[in-house]
Image (cartoon, rainbow, N blue to C red; front, side, top):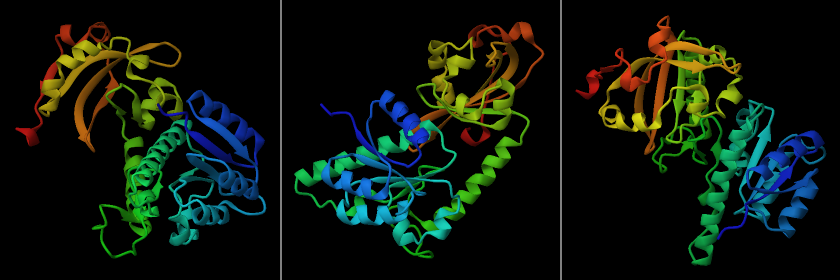
Length: 315
């Protein structure tokens, strides 16, 4: 049975270390703190950790310098950088930046930190198993992952070489793709309909600005909720009964209600469809205000306004 993942948190701000330590411990991590780069080097080379969470803006030795030394001394120890600089990939040479497992740009959410730490721990423990089995554990096991989107993984190749290196992206390719993603994010945030994307556990993974405003949550709050938290009429059993049609590419549309942060129930028209991303299913709901209050309170199965719309591309 695995022990709790051990995290070395390196930051000189006591408020940040206190808040992050408390949160990570609640999420099942064992956390130790170092306030300086030298302290981080000493602890990481004399004790065992699954991952290092390292602030770039440290006094004295900055995080990039510490990252370089950790990569030499503990090459299989994944390091996640925390930075306030959005241009880090432009100002830091790729050969240095690529030594990190990932980096997160402030302001980041707690959920983002938890997600990337879990991935780092999984890879570190996989590497440990391979080392015990006598399999090579070169640093190639830890191709760096840059947050947003987390699935984009730059590698140490040069720009212009294409992406034949196991589908990984160079830093330059990542930067171009990240700009495209930011453009899509901007577009989603400026359309009049609310958009919510949820995983199979009903956890909200994405909410655009219209959804945030309609439900009166912050984006971080909303993306830490589950669908039943905002949908008082949600019935998981009936949703499961509709999965076959959704998997056939059909869109389910009906009237229902969503609940705001203040508890107010607002009638909406909702269209739900299912998509598969990297082998995982997600639901996307597009909603807009509705005047049909009476019908909105009915469950989809009993709602006479429920309709299936066929996706032409799947016919």
